[in-house]
Image (cartoon, rainbow, N blue to C red):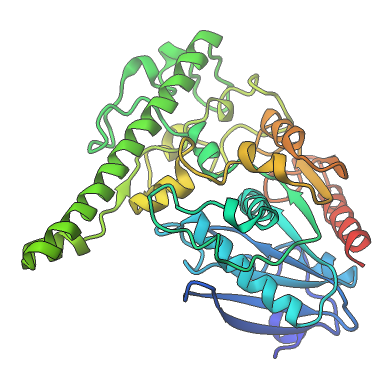
Amino acid sequence: MRTPAEFNGDWYPRDLPPGVEVSSHLLPTGDGAATRGWLYTPRAATAVVAVMHPRADASRHYLIPDLLDAGLAVWAQTGRGGGGDLRLVHESALLDIAAGLTFLRKRGFGGVGALGNSGGASLYTFYVQQSLRDPASRIARTPGGRPSGLPEADLPPLDAVAYLAPHPGQGALLLECIDPSVTDETDPLSADPALDLFDPANGFAAPPASSAYTPEFVQRYRAAQRARVARIDAAARALIDRRLAARTRYKRSGADADLRAATHMPVVTVHRTDADPRTVDLSLDPSDRRYGSVFGPRPHVVNYGLIGFGRMTTPEAWLSTWSGLSSNAAMAATAPEMTLPCLLVEYTGDNCVFPAQIRAVYDALGSTDKAHLRVRGDHFGRALDGDGPEVPARARTAVAAWLRDRLT
């Protein structure tokens, strides 16, 4: 158990309020894995908000102090992968969430809500979809073919979900920022000039000037992005099939070579995943955003570097998480089954999630109790140029008040 004074130091945007107990918990999951979380408990809290991101550590999420000020406890959870996505299978992540919610219900909390920030939005929506279904109708196998464990799982219910800068799903996000000009997956520098987003012949302008792409180019580009993802999907499935075939051979032969092939876990490497036209052409789906992507102000350079979505995963993780064609965690598929109260906060300067994507997510939510709040700020809730910190703070205050009202 730790006190706020012991836990403070580098919190964004401010320290924890006094009187909060902070404790760490390692929990077993229904399928024999483990998940860890931090429980922040103000005095006399009767309701709790769970926050988890499929790939990031949520233990110091910037909204936690505001939720605590509102009298809500906070459960900040990290999945079994420890915040990475090398082996991130979304179906398994739902079992991590279930372990956390079981723990919270046993602690005696009445109302239990969720804060779905960025990729956490599609994660929690996928969880709600599966938790509300009859167990027999839950997803039985992952896109890679493994048993999901969901039909047999105890999936405790949530009571409300607040979305903060939600995107349409890991795979759906990557589907629109993967570089379709790659002609050889083994050559990170290969490029089809006709599909090169950063070729002036196609409309690119050196920053900070905004590029200008024709509707015809954007249409061809989007179709080529889907085609590239389909090729990677096929390669991932071939790798899975190869390993399964080796397992079958080993059962017959007992040969060491077959055992090695059956045990080997290949890795799917995906080059150049920071190439959404909207990051460099500000006339496309216009907003208050700055030039550049969530990774930096120069996508034409970052796209060729180490940073990016879905860069390295197992075949199973690619299909479950990063494939916009195969993942079950796409909001377009899960949001219509969301019937809980929902608040969606859109940051108008977001250069990771764009207005059309936000509208599509909101429109798809099946809830009859839902609200959409637009606040100036970037994807991480920081002030835009010319704004003071009080402007994006409106989102934090609104979310905390809304969750308090729904859960207490």
